[in-house]
Image 1 (cartoon, rainbow, N blue to C red):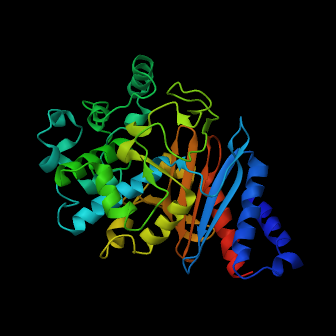
Image 2 (cartoon, rainbow, N blue to C red):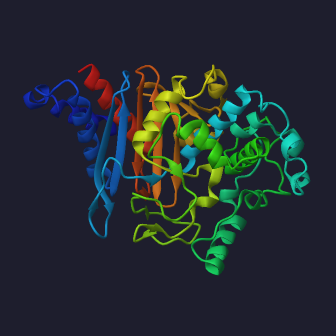
Image 3 (tube, rainbow, N blue to C red):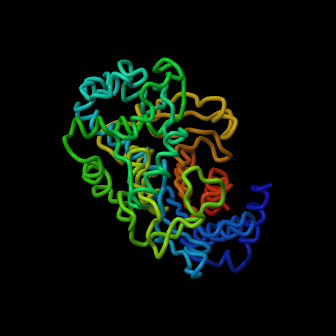
Length: 389
Protein backbone atom coordinates (compact mmCIF):
# COMPACT_ATOMS: atom_id res chain seq x y z
CA UNK A 1 0.00 0.00 0.00
CA UNK A 2 2.80 2.40 0.91
CA UNK A 3 4.65 1.83 -2.35
CA UNK A 4 1.37 2.28 -4.26
CA UNK A 5 0.92 5.66 -2.58
CA UNK A 6 4.43 6.69 -3.53
CA UNK A 7 3.95 5.45 -7.08
CA UNK A 8 0.88 7.69 -7.38
CA UNK A 9 2.89 10.65 -6.06
CA UNK A 10 5.63 10.00 -8.60
CA UNK A 11 3.11 9.82 -11.45
CA UNK A 12 1.71 13.18 -10.35
CA UNK A 13 5.24 14.54 -10.44
CA UNK A 14 5.36 13.80 -14.18
CA UNK A 15 3.17 16.84 -14.95
CA UNK A 16 4.37 19.19 -17.71
CA UNK A 17 5.44 21.73 -15.09
CA UNK A 18 7.57 19.11 -13.37
CA UNK A 19 9.04 17.94 -16.67
CA UNK A 20 10.02 21.53 -17.40
CA UNK A 21 12.26 21.77 -14.35
CA UNK A 22 16.02 22.08 -14.63
CA UNK A 23 17.87 18.73 -14.50
CA UNK A 24 18.98 19.27 -10.89
CA UNK A 25 15.47 19.85 -9.59
CA UNK A 26 13.47 16.58 -10.01
CA UNK A 27 15.23 14.79 -7.16
CA UNK A 28 14.39 17.53 -4.69
CA UNK A 29 10.86 17.99 -6.05
CA UNK A 30 10.05 14.29 -5.92
CA UNK A 31 11.70 13.89 -2.54
CA UNK A 32 9.65 16.74 -1.10
CA UNK A 33 6.46 15.28 -2.54
CA UNK A 34 7.19 11.86 -1.05
CA UNK A 35 8.18 13.28 2.35
CA UNK A 36 5.02 15.39 2.49
CA UNK A 37 2.87 12.40 1.49
CA UNK A 38 4.42 10.24 4.23
CA UNK A 39 3.69 12.91 6.82
CA UNK A 40 0.12 13.29 5.57
CA UNK A 41 -0.43 9.53 5.68
CA UNK A 42 1.15 8.77 9.08
CA UNK A 43 0.85 12.06 10.93
CA UNK A 44 4.36 12.50 12.30
CA UNK A 45 5.10 16.04 13.44
CA UNK A 46 8.18 16.85 11.42
CA UNK A 47 11.09 15.33 9.54
CA UNK A 48 14.30 16.12 7.76
CA UNK A 49 15.63 13.96 4.95
CA UNK A 50 18.54 13.93 2.56
CA UNK A 51 19.51 12.06 -0.59
CA UNK A 52 23.02 11.76 -2.01
CA UNK A 53 23.05 10.83 -5.69
CA UNK A 54 25.64 8.68 -7.50
CA UNK A 55 27.66 11.78 -8.49
CA UNK A 56 27.73 13.01 -4.87
CA UNK A 57 25.05 15.67 -5.32
CA UNK A 58 23.06 16.14 -2.11
CA UNK A 59 19.43 17.17 -1.77
CA UNK A 60 18.25 18.28 1.69
CA UNK A 61 14.54 18.14 2.52
CA UNK A 62 12.22 19.04 5.42
CA UNK A 63 8.53 18.88 6.26
CA UNK A 64 6.39 19.81 9.23
CA UNK A 65 7.20 21.33 12.60
CA UNK A 66 10.27 21.41 14.81
CA UNK A 67 8.10 22.38 17.80
CA UNK A 68 4.36 21.75 18.06
CA UNK A 69 3.70 24.26 20.83
CA UNK A 70 5.18 27.33 19.15
CA UNK A 71 4.60 26.14 15.54
CA UNK A 72 8.26 26.50 14.59
CA UNK A 73 8.84 25.08 11.13
CA UNK A 74 11.50 22.45 10.70
CA UNK A 75 14.33 23.28 8.27
CA UNK A 76 16.72 21.06 6.31
CA UNK A 77 19.48 21.99 8.81
CA UNK A 78 17.48 21.19 11.97
CA UNK A 79 19.28 18.65 14.15
CA UNK A 80 18.04 15.70 16.20
CA UNK A 81 19.48 13.02 18.44
CA UNK A 82 20.23 10.00 16.26
CA UNK A 83 20.26 7.04 18.67
CA UNK A 84 21.95 3.85 17.58
CA UNK A 85 23.07 5.20 14.21
CA UNK A 86 26.06 6.30 16.30
CA UNK A 87 27.12 2.65 16.51
CA UNK A 88 28.25 2.89 12.89
CA UNK A 89 30.68 5.64 13.92
CA UNK A 90 31.96 3.71 16.93
CA UNK A 91 32.59 0.65 14.75
CA UNK A 92 34.39 2.81 12.19
CA UNK A 93 36.67 4.24 14.89
CA UNK A 94 37.56 0.69 15.95
CA UNK A 95 38.19 -0.29 12.31
CA UNK A 96 40.47 2.70 11.80
CA UNK A 97 42.55 1.73 14.82
CA UNK A 98 42.73 -1.88 13.67
CA UNK A 99 44.04 -0.78 10.28
CA UNK A 100 46.90 0.95 12.08
CA UNK A 101 47.56 -2.27 14.04
CA UNK A 102 46.72 -0.50 17.27
CA UNK A 103 43.83 -2.89 17.83
CA UNK A 104 43.25 -6.51 16.87
CA UNK A 105 39.58 -7.23 16.17
CA UNK A 106 40.02 -10.86 17.23
CA UNK A 107 42.14 -10.39 20.35
CA UNK A 108 40.43 -10.85 23.74
CA UNK A 109 39.31 -7.52 25.15
CA UNK A 110 40.71 -8.80 28.46
CA UNK A 111 44.09 -7.56 27.19
CA UNK A 112 42.77 -3.99 27.47
CA UNK A 113 40.13 -4.22 30.18
CA UNK A 114 41.10 -7.29 32.22
CA UNK A 115 42.56 -5.21 35.05
CA UNK A 116 39.24 -3.44 35.73
CA UNK A 117 37.84 -4.52 39.12
CA UNK A 118 34.56 -5.61 37.54
CA UNK A 119 35.98 -7.63 34.63
CA UNK A 120 35.87 -11.03 36.36
CA UNK A 121 32.08 -10.67 36.66
CA UNK A 122 31.57 -9.80 32.98
CA UNK A 123 29.63 -12.63 31.25
CA UNK A 124 31.82 -14.41 28.68
CA UNK A 125 34.52 -11.90 29.60
CA UNK A 126 37.54 -14.04 28.70
CA UNK A 127 36.08 -14.92 25.28
CA UNK A 128 34.91 -11.49 24.14
CA UNK A 129 36.64 -9.81 21.21
CA UNK A 130 35.91 -6.54 19.44
CA UNK A 131 34.58 -8.43 16.44
CA UNK A 132 32.08 -10.37 18.55
CA UNK A 133 31.01 -7.22 20.38
CA UNK A 134 30.56 -5.08 17.26
CA UNK A 135 28.49 -7.82 15.59
CA UNK A 136 26.39 -8.33 18.75
CA UNK A 137 27.65 -11.87 19.23
CA UNK A 138 28.93 -11.42 22.78
CA UNK A 139 25.99 -13.12 24.49
CA UNK A 140 25.40 -10.12 26.79
CA UNK A 141 22.01 -8.81 27.77
CA UNK A 142 21.21 -5.23 26.76
CA UNK A 143 21.45 -2.90 29.75
CA UNK A 144 18.94 -0.57 28.04
CA UNK A 145 16.23 -3.22 28.38
CA UNK A 146 17.10 -4.07 31.97
CA UNK A 147 14.43 -3.11 34.47
CA UNK A 148 17.20 -2.42 36.99
CA UNK A 149 18.68 0.14 34.61
CA UNK A 150 15.33 1.74 33.85
CA UNK A 151 14.57 2.11 37.55
CA UNK A 152 18.06 3.46 38.18
CA UNK A 153 17.60 6.14 35.50
CA UNK A 154 14.37 7.32 37.07
CA UNK A 155 15.83 7.35 40.58
CA UNK A 156 18.95 9.24 39.52
CA UNK A 157 16.94 11.91 37.73
CA UNK A 158 14.70 12.28 40.76
CA UNK A 159 17.62 12.64 43.17
CA UNK A 160 20.17 14.48 41.04
CA UNK A 161 18.03 16.31 38.51
CA UNK A 162 17.79 16.23 34.70
CA UNK A 163 21.53 16.67 34.22
CA UNK A 164 22.26 13.30 35.82
CA UNK A 165 23.98 10.71 33.63
CA UNK A 166 25.68 7.33 33.94
CA UNK A 167 29.33 6.94 32.97
CA UNK A 168 30.32 3.94 30.81
CA UNK A 169 31.65 1.77 33.62
CA UNK A 170 28.45 2.35 35.56
CA UNK A 171 26.50 1.04 32.56
CA UNK A 172 28.56 -2.14 32.48
CA UNK A 173 27.49 -2.82 36.08
CA UNK A 174 23.97 -3.67 34.90
CA UNK A 175 25.14 -6.80 33.07
CA UNK A 176 27.72 -8.05 35.57
CA UNK A 177 26.97 -11.45 37.04
CA UNK A 178 24.11 -12.16 34.64
CA UNK A 179 23.89 -15.47 32.82
CA UNK A 180 25.26 -15.30 29.25
CA UNK A 181 22.58 -15.68 26.60
CA UNK A 182 24.92 -17.94 24.62
CA UNK A 183 28.67 -18.62 24.37
CA UNK A 184 30.56 -15.73 22.79
CA UNK A 185 30.45 -15.91 19.00
CA UNK A 186 27.69 -18.52 18.82
CA UNK A 187 24.55 -16.41 18.55
CA UNK A 188 23.17 -12.92 18.00
CA UNK A 189 21.58 -10.52 20.49
CA UNK A 190 21.51 -6.77 19.99
CA UNK A 191 22.97 -5.03 23.02
CA UNK A 192 24.15 -1.47 23.62
CA UNK A 193 26.45 -2.90 26.28
CA UNK A 194 28.57 -4.43 23.53
CA UNK A 195 29.35 -0.97 22.17
CA UNK A 196 29.97 0.52 25.61
CA UNK A 197 32.69 -2.11 26.10
CA UNK A 198 34.13 -1.35 22.65
CA UNK A 199 34.27 2.35 23.58
CA UNK A 200 36.16 1.53 26.76
CA UNK A 201 38.68 -0.41 24.68
CA UNK A 202 39.12 2.58 22.34
CA UNK A 203 39.87 4.86 25.27
CA UNK A 204 42.21 2.31 26.84
CA UNK A 205 44.32 1.94 23.70
CA UNK A 206 44.37 5.63 22.73
CA UNK A 207 44.51 7.17 26.19
CA UNK A 208 42.03 9.77 24.95
CA UNK A 209 38.35 10.60 25.30
CA UNK A 210 36.28 8.66 22.76
CA UNK A 211 34.62 11.78 21.37
CA UNK A 212 38.01 13.42 20.76
CA UNK A 213 39.12 10.34 18.83
CA UNK A 214 35.87 10.34 16.84
CA UNK A 215 36.22 14.00 15.93
CA UNK A 216 39.85 13.68 14.87
CA UNK A 217 39.35 10.53 12.82
CA UNK A 218 35.91 11.04 11.28
CA UNK A 219 33.85 14.14 12.01
CA UNK A 220 36.44 16.76 11.07
CA UNK A 221 38.24 15.04 8.15
CA UNK A 222 35.13 13.98 6.21
CA UNK A 223 33.78 16.64 7.22
CA UNK A 224 30.41 16.24 8.96
CA UNK A 225 29.74 19.78 10.22
CA UNK A 226 26.23 19.14 11.57
CA UNK A 227 27.31 16.25 13.82
CA UNK A 228 28.49 16.65 17.42
CA UNK A 229 28.71 14.59 20.59
CA UNK A 230 25.37 14.41 22.40
CA UNK A 231 27.02 14.78 25.80
CA UNK A 232 25.03 17.67 27.25
CA UNK A 233 21.44 18.88 27.49
CA UNK A 234 21.88 22.07 25.45
CA UNK A 235 22.50 21.28 21.78
CA UNK A 236 22.21 24.10 19.22
CA UNK A 237 19.49 23.93 16.55
CA UNK A 238 17.86 20.88 18.15
CA UNK A 239 14.26 20.09 17.22
CA UNK A 240 11.84 19.54 20.07
CA UNK A 241 11.37 15.80 20.61
CA UNK A 242 8.17 13.96 21.50
CA UNK A 243 7.40 10.54 22.96
CA UNK A 244 4.24 9.02 21.49
CA UNK A 245 4.39 5.61 23.17
CA UNK A 246 5.06 4.09 26.59
CA UNK A 247 8.37 5.27 28.04
CA UNK A 248 10.23 3.06 30.52
CA UNK A 249 12.31 5.95 31.85
CA UNK A 250 9.46 8.09 33.17
CA UNK A 251 10.09 10.99 30.78
CA UNK A 252 7.39 13.51 29.82
CA UNK A 253 5.72 13.45 26.37
CA UNK A 254 7.86 16.42 25.27
CA UNK A 255 11.56 15.91 26.00
CA UNK A 256 12.68 19.52 25.52
CA UNK A 257 11.87 22.70 27.42
CA UNK A 258 12.86 26.01 25.81
CA UNK A 259 15.21 24.09 23.51
CA UNK A 260 16.95 22.21 26.34
CA UNK A 261 16.60 18.47 26.82
CA UNK A 262 14.85 17.33 30.00
CA UNK A 263 17.35 14.47 30.29
CA UNK A 264 21.08 14.10 29.76
CA UNK A 265 21.86 12.17 26.55
CA UNK A 266 25.48 11.61 27.65
CA UNK A 267 24.50 8.23 29.11
CA UNK A 268 24.16 6.81 25.58
CA UNK A 269 27.86 7.30 24.71
CA UNK A 270 29.16 4.74 22.16
CA UNK A 271 25.76 3.04 22.06
CA UNK A 272 24.77 6.05 19.93
CA UNK A 273 25.69 9.37 21.45
CA UNK A 274 25.39 11.90 18.60
CA UNK A 275 23.30 14.88 17.61
CA UNK A 276 23.22 15.22 13.85
CA UNK A 277 21.17 15.92 10.73
CA UNK A 278 19.96 13.88 7.76
CA UNK A 279 22.46 15.61 5.48
CA UNK A 280 25.43 14.38 7.48
CA UNK A 281 23.93 10.90 7.87
CA UNK A 282 23.43 10.57 4.11
CA UNK A 283 26.96 11.81 3.43
CA UNK A 284 28.24 9.34 6.00
CA UNK A 285 26.39 6.43 4.40
CA UNK A 286 27.67 7.31 0.93
CA UNK A 287 31.28 7.61 2.04
CA UNK A 288 31.32 4.68 4.45
CA UNK A 289 29.82 2.07 2.15
CA UNK A 290 31.68 3.20 -0.95
CA UNK A 291 34.96 2.73 0.91
CA UNK A 292 35.91 6.41 1.17
CA UNK A 293 35.34 7.19 4.85
CA UNK A 294 38.51 5.51 6.14
CA UNK A 295 41.94 4.87 4.66
CA UNK A 296 42.65 1.45 3.20
CA UNK A 297 40.38 -1.46 2.32
CA UNK A 298 38.02 -1.80 5.26
CA UNK A 299 34.76 -2.81 3.55
CA UNK A 300 35.30 -6.58 3.77
CA UNK A 301 35.63 -6.42 7.55
CA UNK A 302 32.81 -3.89 7.86
CA UNK A 303 30.31 -5.97 5.87
CA UNK A 304 31.27 -9.41 7.22
CA UNK A 305 27.85 -10.07 8.73
CA UNK A 306 25.85 -12.59 10.73
CA UNK A 307 22.07 -13.22 10.63
CA UNK A 308 19.96 -11.39 13.16
CA UNK A 309 17.94 -13.47 15.59
CA UNK A 310 14.38 -14.61 14.88
CA UNK A 311 12.84 -11.68 16.77
CA UNK A 312 14.79 -9.16 14.71
CA UNK A 313 14.03 -11.03 11.48
CA UNK A 314 10.32 -11.06 12.29
CA UNK A 315 10.46 -7.28 12.66
CA UNK A 316 12.80 -6.35 9.82
CA UNK A 317 12.43 -9.25 7.35
CA UNK A 318 13.92 -12.71 6.91
CA UNK A 319 16.99 -11.63 4.97
CA UNK A 320 18.67 -9.27 7.42
CA UNK A 321 22.21 -9.46 8.78
CA UNK A 322 24.49 -7.39 11.01
CA UNK A 323 28.13 -6.55 10.35
CA UNK A 324 30.42 -4.16 12.22
CA UNK A 325 27.89 -1.49 13.12
CA UNK A 326 25.88 -2.05 9.94
CA UNK A 327 22.54 -3.68 9.18
CA UNK A 328 22.41 -5.37 5.78
CA UNK A 329 18.96 -6.09 4.39
CA UNK A 330 17.14 -6.86 1.16
CA UNK A 331 14.79 -4.13 -0.08
CA UNK A 332 12.78 -3.25 -3.17
CA UNK A 333 15.86 -1.30 -4.26
CA UNK A 334 18.24 -4.21 -3.76
CA UNK A 335 20.71 -4.68 -0.94
CA UNK A 336 20.76 -1.84 1.58
CA UNK A 337 23.54 -1.06 4.06
CA UNK A 338 22.77 1.21 6.98
CA UNK A 339 21.56 1.66 10.51
CA UNK A 340 18.55 3.01 12.35
CA UNK A 341 18.28 4.47 15.80
CA UNK A 342 15.93 5.72 18.47
CA UNK A 343 16.37 7.79 21.55
CA UNK A 344 13.67 9.41 23.68
CA UNK A 345 11.93 11.88 21.37
CA UNK A 346 13.58 10.99 18.06
CA UNK A 347 13.91 8.38 15.28
CA UNK A 348 16.65 8.17 12.64
CA UNK A 349 17.74 5.99 9.74
CA UNK A 350 20.31 6.04 6.97
CA UNK A 351 20.71 3.56 4.12
CA UNK A 352 22.89 3.10 1.07
CA UNK A 353 21.38 1.27 -1.91
CA UNK A 354 24.40 -0.32 -3.51
CA UNK A 355 22.79 -1.20 -6.82
CA UNK A 356 21.92 2.46 -7.43
CA UNK A 357 24.82 4.15 -5.56
CA UNK A 358 22.30 6.31 -3.72
CA UNK A 359 22.31 7.16 0.00
CA UNK A 360 19.23 8.25 1.93
CA UNK A 361 18.76 9.50 5.49
CA UNK A 362 15.71 10.58 7.45
CA UNK A 363 14.99 11.85 10.97
CA UNK A 364 11.63 12.30 12.72
CA UNK A 365 11.28 14.35 15.91
CA UNK A 366 9.01 11.85 17.63
CA UNK A 367 9.42 8.39 19.10
CA UNK A 368 6.36 6.59 17.78
CA UNK A 369 5.03 3.86 15.48
CA UNK A 370 6.75 5.09 12.33
CA UNK A 371 8.27 2.70 9.80
CA UNK A 372 11.58 4.43 9.14
CA UNK A 373 12.89 1.60 6.96
CA UNK A 374 9.85 1.92 4.70
CA UNK A 375 10.25 5.70 4.58
CA UNK A 376 13.87 5.36 3.51
CA UNK A 377 12.99 3.02 0.65
CA UNK A 378 10.23 5.38 -0.48
CA UNK A 379 12.69 8.28 -0.66
CA UNK A 380 15.26 6.09 -2.37
CA UNK A 381 12.69 5.02 -4.97
CA UNK A 382 11.85 8.67 -5.65
CA UNK A 383 15.54 9.40 -6.27
CA UNK A 384 15.97 6.39 -8.55
CA UNK A 385 12.87 7.37 -10.52
CA UNK A 386 14.21 10.88 -10.94
CA UNK A 387 17.36 9.46 -12.50
CA UNK A 388 15.43 7.14 -14.81
CA UNK A 389 11.87 8.47 -15.14
